[in-house]
Every structure is written in structure tokens, then in C-alpha cells.
Image (tube, rainbow, N blue to C red; front, side):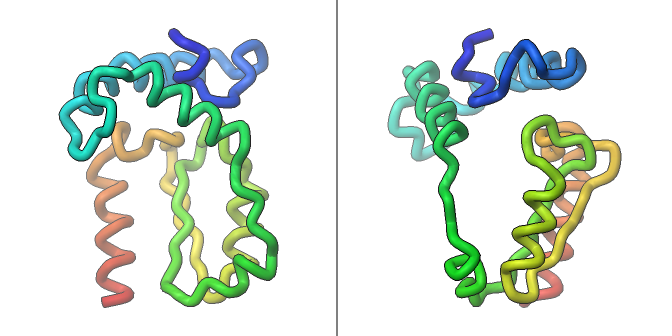
Length: 132
């Protein structure tokens, strides 16, 4: 597995189950990614992964003031067992963005949309129904 596929994760400290999940996702993702338009580099997965890795290691640093300025309906969603997103970060976003809500998908990880598409889609549809 390429280092880029894991983003900024520390492979040595990553739990084995999480590492295996990330490896499975990366192995599965290459071919579908090539077919998803508008991929600017459909034949250069490594460059895409390098860009994602850079993004993960230099996450945006939005200020609380910027987050409080968000004026659109916002749902912060994550899997209960996310391998990389800290629960306190989610709670901070929800507390800081006006009227934001948190949806935690039970028994799922960062790859909830692959692990349980029905649960993930249901959460998205709930959001759309609530704010139409």
C-alpha cells in the first residue's frame, strides 16, 4: 500500500483493523476513481493520492469566526469508528457552525458509504428532506 493512500496517518500507530480497512479501500478505489468524471488525471492514481495526502497533512485552519459565518444548513457526518477524524473535532464544528447538527453512523468508519450504503444514503436523504 502506498503511503499516499493513507494520507497523514501514522501507519505504525494505526490500529490493525483501521489499517486493513484503509488498505482495502485503496485497493478497491483505483478503478472506480478512474471512471468518475471529471477526474483530471484518470491514469495517475499516485498523483491523486499524493494530492490527498498533502491535503490531509495541511488541513484548512478555518477560524471560529469563519465557521460562525456559515449560513447554510450543515450536517457534520461521520462513522462511529472513524480512523482519522477525532470526535472532539466533530463536536467543535457542530458547536461553532450555527445550527449545525451531528450525525454519527453507528458501527461504521470513515468509509461508511462503502460499509453500509443504505445507512449513509439514509443520512443524506434525511438531511435533504429536513432542509428542502
